Picture 1: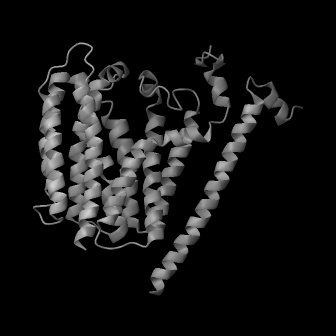
Picture 2 (picture 1 turned 180 degrees about the horizontal axis):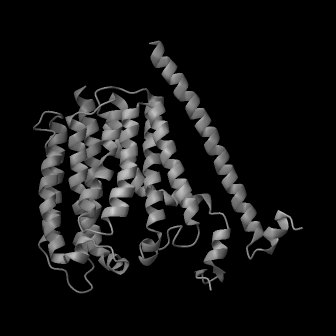
Picture 3 (picture 1 turned 120 degrees about the vertical axis):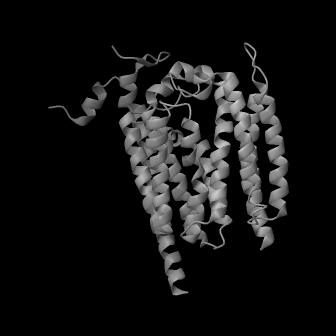
Length: 53
Length: 310
């Protein structure tokens, strides 16, 4: 039974390029999610501030 | 047999689609240049509103509007991938160039659109969020799917989608609407036809090959030139109108009158000339570039004028 790595090796694609793109996308996704978490935190603080005044 | 995606490397379109798209291609899918106009006009709509918005909430609102505009661009490119592949100007976009799976573009566009509406609703109010949702749907369904392949009036009616950002910006700040943002809407709405028809004159062959019924393709170059000129007149009136109506001061009024005069002069140059074979279309390119500057300066000055009065 073949595993996923063998499946990828059998495709007519550049595996190093595939890994590079996956790594770059994961990095961008990580940064975006962190930024969104920070933004939602800031929105919450701003709304609490508005409600308090 | 597969279609070559990149003849120089010998990779096929199906091979290219097995490779996950680069994150840069997702950015390209959002049409960043079109997005920048939506961001700027929405920001101006927000800044001229009589109610000040908390800076964090204002930033979140502008981000949401930018993401909504990006979602519209992504969904537009998903739907028009085949047509884009036929036009030189758009053939290098991620989907027609074989760098992205259309389904990935669809998922990205829908996800981004839903997220942008939720973000705007949470950060500001659901009235602004509903306007953003309406603008995304209008651009996709009314303009891209319905009007664009059917009628040369596609730009005229479809222009409403691009004119909505100042209304959304104002609504995000105030929770409602007023005459001034509607005048800004009218300005962009009437500015869109001369702006796009100037472009369509020098890329007419592209539209013709793709079978898109743009005005120069259907009605001819001469009729398009006349229409550019005639649309410029109500556009200039809409640009100047906030001044005599008392919504802005003399600073905006004088700048709007001067720039509108230049716009009319350039439109007359385009409107009443006859294009030659292999014409370099310099007056049309000049009008197209000036139209971008015109809108940018008017919106910047209306903000400066409002702040000057405070």
